Amino acid sequence: MKDFEATLDPVGGRLITHDVRPPRHASYSSLDTYGHCPAQWAFGRLWRETPEWDDPLTVGSIAHATLELAVSTPSVTDPAWLPLARRAIAMERERNLLPANRWKGDPIPAGVKAPNGSPATDEDWARLAANRLNGFRLADVFDGDMLRPAAAEQRIDAEVWGIPMTGSVDYRDESGRVVDWKTGRLPELGSPKAESHQNQLRVYKALLDTQGIQVADARDVYVEHRVGHMADLSDDAMEATGTLMRSRWDGMRRDADAGSYAMTPSYLCPWCPLARACPLASPARGDKARHAAARGIDPTDPRLHVADGRPSGDPLAGMLPDACGQGEDKEDDMDLLDMLDMAPKPKKATLPPPGPWAKGPDPWDTPEGREAAARWGMGDKPKREARPDTSDDVDPWATPMPTKAALGSTDGGDAPWAVEPEAKPAPQAEAKPEAKAPTRRMARGKAYDPSVLSEGAVNSAGYGFTRLTIMAAEAYAIGPDDPDAALLALIRAGWAASRAAWGPNTPDVAGLADGRPDTDALLRWLDSPLARDADEAIGRLMPADGTPADRIGRAGRAAARALIAARDLIR
Image 1 (cartoon, one colour):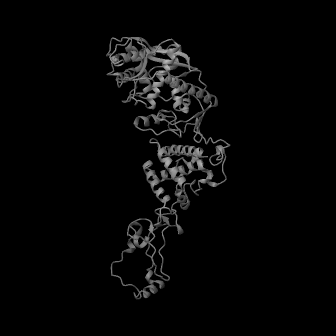
Image 2 (cartoon, one colour; image 1 turned 120 degrees about the vertical axis):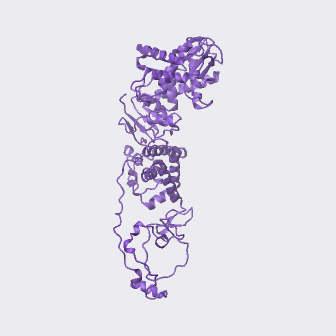
Image 3 (cartoon, helix red, strand yellow; image 1 turned 90 degrees about the vertical axis):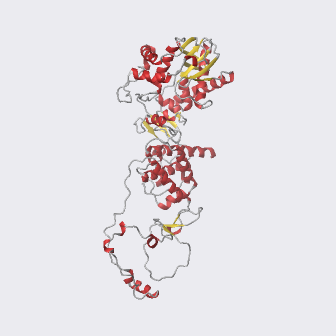
């Protein structure tokens, strides 16, 4: 594994590294990867994933060599694929001993375990490749026509469209037809993957043109599906592919000279070695994609750094982390990346559990109580039905509280919030003992009213209150083992993403950096449209894989980038 140093800039959306040398030539696969994501191409030159069982590159390479052997005897239209796959491994191993091929290494990766835990052997890999080819007949290539091989695995190095290109044409027939073997899923016609395959065939035609070889048609043959897709080789299509390839080649060399590569999300993100660390990575959908993403570089790898990357001339510089200077406000110290970190935080201070309950004085026995009883015509003390007094043996903390009497509920429910009754004339009682009010009262306000009303009452119809409730549910779905930590992380991620984009328009929330946000300030923030938009962006960009900390962190960084893009569009 190469030594390198690289930095991810989540605000600028770029990978920064000066350890990638400008390429001297290009293959179609390198230009294609660069076109999908320049950062993926660059980092792929620095970091190699360790192959695993059924590694598609290894199996695909063996399958290609097996097909090369098969077309050498085209009269055998339905070959025995397993014996050919065994021979293909031996052939590739011998080829890779040649000086020009030594960089490829052995065709069978070392250290791979089979599903039963034993080391994967040549036979295991041969069977994996043969299984991809079983059922495929050579007659399927040209709709029943017999193959007339002119070349197989024909390597060509030539300049096309001003690019020093290298390529290997899988199969060329004497009839002028060209075939590129494809293993794996069959893409839908017109999809990005299918269009990429078509561009590859046009590159091969351009390479063959330099050798004076006429190409009548070119097709991708998906061997596991026995389906072929013809490529458009018209002048317009060839010109469009040439323009695209030249643009990518120029960008590749320009980025390598600058040491800066754009991070561009696509359907290939899960197969990128940066999948676990990239703040813009598209979520992995499906078991294979999630497994592929999990194999990427550990975000804590010391060779990979994450920085703000904000240009010093940006008017929002100083709003975020140390990398670009700090603002003076306390909440400006809440680094976007630190806020997205769910490392264990000090536990919040909690009140000690209540001690043993002791019966207090009867309020009716106080002077005020006797006066009130007399005023209401109840004599010195209200008469009560005699019953055994067991209150000394009962702990009220261990039994449900009488919500109507203690919490002022209007419906007798068990809600932990006091419900503010509708306005009615209250009797004027003098010196009536008042029960200690709960910390918050629930009030029936309007949806357009703030979540925090007068005297600290909470508006159950307020947008911020509703948003907090929804975020709590989202937090439980993301991190059911510790939903409180997940909720705090979601709130902090949304605030940080909004501050990254909108600066001081995002209000400070006292205590949020310490994990103990002021309730009024928090609800006022959640009332705002900026909080709504940030939370919506995080929800849409939430990856499906990883720990709660990893998922919320990646979604928060991606949301920051999305909000900044929106800001820049209207600036």
